[in-house]
Length: 414
Image (cartoon, rainbow, N blue to C red; front, side, top):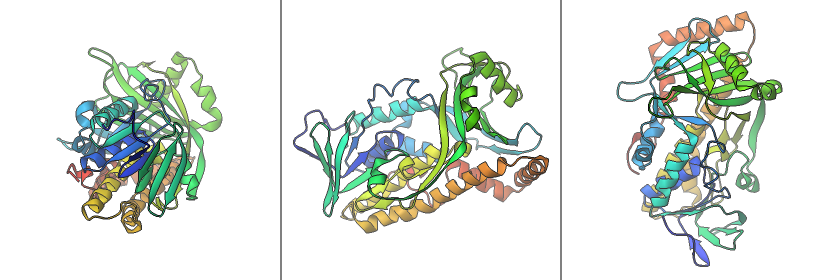
């Protein structure tokens, strides 16, 4: 890592990344693997982000995203995670549905706690020759001029680069300052996140159980230590008006409610970590580029967690943008060149829109109430389960291996 404690009056790099979350750090490390330098600026204190109280979520890292983490040296700091070998999709607890299986040598995904992902990414970033981490520090002024970008920080330092990358989350101040419009709406749902220990093994199977009140996901996790109980992560979407009541239930009663929704097939549950609650919404930027600007991750798009694709879309942004910039550098192009950024826009816009539209559609279809709607959904899922080409296409989407894949998502260097 480039030491940033005592820089000169101005620090220069190939890109400035506003946002040091999972996508921002991934992008910085990916750029480093291609020989490009970056400065990552984030107001959050890394020490405060290390505990479960900051972010108790866990993420299903799709197989293509995992190849990138291997290629940029992050996987070695994480361990193998908990493999997702099977995904079962059902309409409530009714019979039928869809079942997806991973390959012998490649699961559909791997489960990691977000804090473990963040710690591994930061460790690699700190060891990277071309990454400068400036955290915690707040940017106070951003100027995107004809010949470059300058960011002034609250402590008086100035950072300059040809390109600014906004990875500062769904409420991106950078996107707003650039007057980039978004299509956005709130779902009448909130997600309650919990980690549970259970009596029966999960057999590395993930479940997406659709109820009219919202989807209920069960995601396999590794035990907390040798000899510890089986663990799973729960993502329970509930009506917004009921979220506070469910969230504040005593642990035993809350566990009973979870057992009812999963039909008790994992046996008695015990709440194993603090719960979290998040409002659910959709947003999609009208463009993911601007004058000397590129958006990545939640700054560009935010979707319902119904298919677990949110962070993986951000990883795909990072892989594509890193490749576009690395290839542009080899051609001697200005990294803020509009034509170079247009390639990133073309590469990512269709994929992100298709996934966003699909997850929004699923949310609405499975939210339809009534026996007729349920019967139609089950008939559709049973049909897909028997149509090999269609099922294979859906599996590719789950793995993140559809479309024109960037090199890093294929496990190749940029």
